[in-house]
Image (cartoon, rainbow, N blue to C red; front, side, top):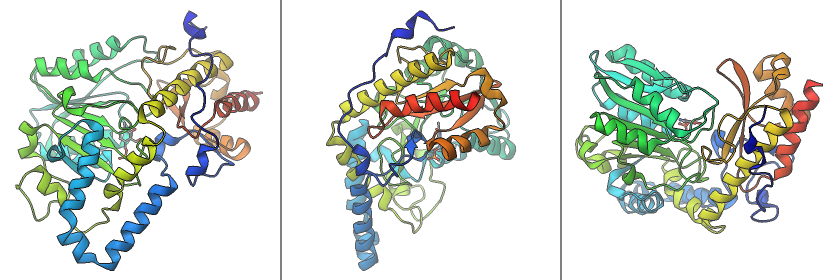
Length: 396
Ligand SMILES: Cc1ncc(COP(=O)(O)O)c(C=O)c1O
């Protein structure tokens, strides 16, 4: 049964431009509805990265050693401006998983402590917490946020009910991975602050998907990917740490500048390819050609419309309100009941790809099957309609 909100988001947004996929290397024969998985990097950004790699290879010591600091400073300045943060409060990391690892492995958590996360946590982050628990003893507890979720308050209440006197850290997604829910992290951080508990935000999907002013959230730690919705090269992500917590946080690779402050320590994590970090600015600038605000609005409206369209087509209840108030640029939609009989989920996803040229992740959550669609400016409304019909055809 659909709710009466089903009419909301009934027409898709106007495309931002024609044939935008030609700016990417993506195969136009594939209906690529999975930008959220690894992101995708525009050609001009990859070209900038190749040019930078050539520069490094032509004068390795000049660029990577003597020239590194101004290059990193410029890159951090650009990323900082994009997320509202001061460059000195940021360190580059390879990915959000690395950002989370750096924090939870720096914190000296012990058997007396508890770490709270949710049942929507990304599997790699759950494993990281499991590792820390097995090696250092803190107990990991998951707040259960059931789908469908009707209002942000449900998530706030679920976390509030799970945080207890032993909780030292809450690890919360800004936008959840399998379920694509935009969580009310500002209110969650506030409630944790009232109880003296620090929050680490896993913002893997947030930069580029929603407008960000990281310091104003007042979390202790915030990590975000640049290679997903900012479209930077793979291996670009950041960790922001509130100034009063910086002293205790170290990169996963300890190197020359141990205990010399966050900016110094993260500026050298052993010899490595730093071009993805340095090209984050090229990605920010490329997407800015379309207007960041316009990109975010387009992608959000397309996700809101796609959720509504697929729910109507499949006659299923949406996971989040149909007005899109708990979505960014992705939506996770329950598959019709009959899709339970279509073999293992991996096979279902592979069939969609093989027979319909549709790339979208099929997941299992709360004992049923869902599909997550991502919306980027190169996607078209028609592609979600094709996904909807493909699933119905497979069921028939
Ligand atoms: C919520 C969340 N956290 C962490 C990650 C991991 O990102 P990465 O592989 O870039 O570390 C993802 C990836 O999709 C995610 O959705």
